[in-house]
Image (cartoon, rainbow over all chains, first blue to last red; front, side):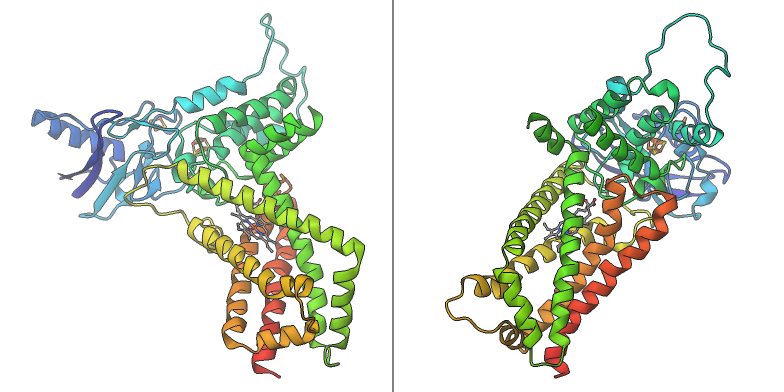
Length: 247
Length: 219
Ligand code: HEM
Ligand code: SF4
Ligand code: FES
């Protein structure tokens, strides 16, 4: 397959940046979008130019490193997959594909398509953890958890922290990410100790990082590679109200 | 007090203020539309005039009116505040941006902001046309006369019909959204929220639109 690519190039954080057009030829329909970019980069390097920088690691949809806005959609046109899982057969032969980085004030561009997502790390540091005493491993059945609750917590825990929700949201809001991280702990007995503090600290950090407010658009849910439900956002709001009333 | 300020400074807190004030305004709409339906009673406006007189003289109603103004102010301030922060959160936009088809038109940013701005504009002009004359006007026209005169003007009448259509749009988004914001929207209660929402985004706007339409075309 052959494609014309319109890719965002930006030398560093302060560079203005611009789109550059490239063409790639003889791409396998089974190649992932990232593999297609690898092919492009081989060509670019051969010409002695600077290859396109993009984030990636596991290339199997579990690490959350990759993430591009492709033809106006976070992680491309297909639902429930990350950019690394997107196959070129999802595009029409000969088409132009627009590839852009996540755009948000809280995710400044480092280079080309690579953005700084450390804002997510700082939100996690603010409260996305449980305190445990180190020591012997406790018996797995010592803390009974109803199956539906465990399932719900597991669904929230599927979030890979990729930032596609922020990128898709018209308000650059991180509510889906934060709600997944609050939910996975709020649902479980182990998360109860910091429950009240956690939600307040994580929301405060989220606001300080410059993410926008949720306006119940649900674009996040549609673009999330792990199909995290906006029901978790309702839970986050509930947890926040509970914390204010309880604390 | 300090914790209250902190509450409203947070993104979630602002949304909660917006949803509570919005839902309060929704309850007001029920009262407002119910009384205005008396316009359709075929008695030359006698009953409508009577209720209007009661509404503008009763102490309890006058007190609620102050709360209502507060609600409008809180709703507008939090709305504009949220909108400003949201605009600032993506200083450089996308070349190609296709908002996924998850959200109905009424919830998408252009429609949401347009409908909110129009409803706000309408609200102010509405108060100028009807509320200020009844409260502070020198000459006291009977309310029914005032309404029928106003709505016999096609420009004003059609403006009202368009405005309540946008109110419907605003509430199509707003009513269900407020339950999400308050953490009450779960799969279990979705049907209930969506059914109640029809009252607010369809039935009430239709009833309101019927009023200028009646005076313009059916009388
Ligand atoms: C009769 C008048 C109004 C009613 C009944 C009403 C009702 C509501 C409700 C229930 C919400 C949902 C809150 C949420 O998302 O949690 C809402 C949202 C909103 N309203 Fe209103 N509203 C009214 C007038 C206005 C006016 C005049 C403005 C203009 C400033 C406005 C601006 C907004 C905005 C910007 C939102 C934000 C939506 C979001 O971020 O999700 N509203 N409204
Ligand atoms: S909620 Fe979904 S889109 Fe957002 S960071 Fe987690 S996995 Fe990515
Ligand atoms: S590279 Fe790990 S999720 Fe895509």
